[in-house]
Length: 102
Image (cartoon, rainbow, N blue to C red; front, side):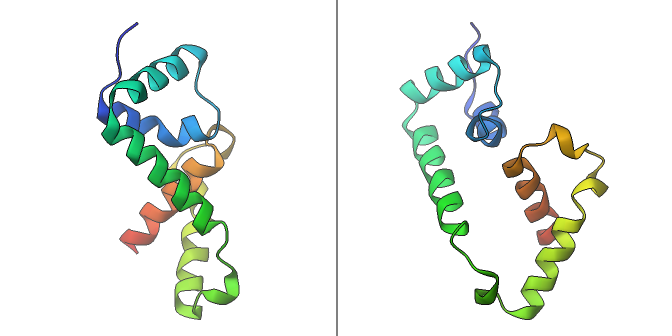
């Protein structure tokens, strides 16, 4: 079994959190976490970010930012990726990338 690099783990983290990794890739991911404190911390940060952003209400977001977010999320399919092949976290990550470019 080929070990994952830190970069590969970062690229797979949303798929891992969505529970969409193959059995083999899930095992490689877990094996890397067992030996890498940095990636373990990164995974914990991602989980915390998801937890905190899930609590954010639309009322807490000022109107200009709310509109920018809506535009970014409407563009999910414009990225050329079929929606059914992306997990919710991957779609959110793509929307945030679009938002930063806007």
